[in-house]
Length: 212
Image (cartoon, rainbow, N blue to C red; front, side, top):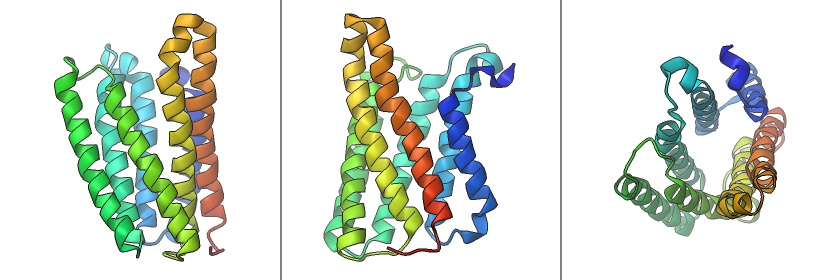
């Protein structure tokens, strides 16, 4: 069946997507970009899970190589537009340039575009994790922006990307030690991090009436 290969972490993401669809009229301005990023994540996960069945070939690598940089560039654009701190805006501009260069450079480093570009994925994830922390900190301490959804999005990105980077960086060595240990490391980092990302975003949209 089409949905048999979809991971249960993706079902939780789709739950977040449904909640945002129900409350979509509550979204204002750059909050709509958060919804768009949820849609892109859902599309990437479903296509990656079902690519073999749809196209009779595994295309997960090329899917994430295209959609992951797009999501992260949108994220830094959101941060740049939501902050009033000049230094943070410049950091986001610089981070966007580096992210584009790293993602583009990965196409030369990896011979096959359908191979998952792990190194650019980790580096760009690290950039967004750091800038997510800075953005959340400035929202709280500098009072730049009052969107609970964007604050939740920043927190979700920081938690998920920090766990994901740690997991993916260690998973190859963990698999060499013991395949089951490798699966556990991947689940604890990427799996649980992804679940937390979705749950935090759901809390953000349900708590929108409050301000920071």
